[in-house]
Amino acid sequence: MKLMIASDIHGSALYCGRLLEAFDREGAGRLLLLGDLLYHGPRNDLPQGYAPKEVIAQLNSRRAQLLCVRGNCDTEVDQMVLDFPILADYCLLYLGERAVYATHGHRFHKGQLPPLRPGDLLLQGHTHVPDWSPCGTDNLCLNPGSVSIPKEGSARGYMTWEDGLFQWKTLEGEVYHSLSL
Image (cartoon, rainbow, N blue to C red):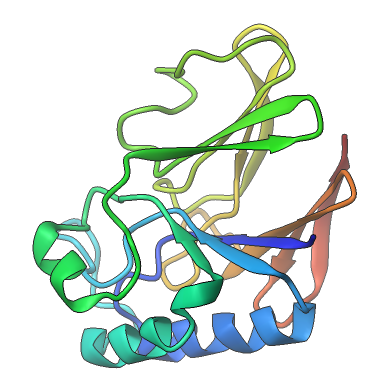
């Protein structure tokens, strides 16, 4: 099954809509959201198309296709309006023999790793910067960047995983990095 991974929508209905268009285009079975869905946070400017109530409707209409972890801007109030679980601090997935620890990145990140075994992956958002770098002892840290507030000159985008291949893509679907495991 193809998995699509995205993070940091921050209440932008414009870019959430573009993400969901990309999800349909990709034909992925599930969309894993790495947190910060509705609120922009006090450190970020309002993203273009900021309309959290529209994001609620957009995401609730896809609830059966979504997996989600909690971001530092996500709250219990957000959970009250969303029809899918968002308050887990992490989820653990398996890609073959590798464990993938998926989290937002504000608690566990490259500088503070969760309990990983050699070969496992840390999948996080939070920084708004795509990443595919080594961390820990024989581990990889992967980050899809941000859907609505990219930083350090990065593109608005997401990742896909299918058959051992991770791809980082712009919202338009242009592949700008690939990693085969």
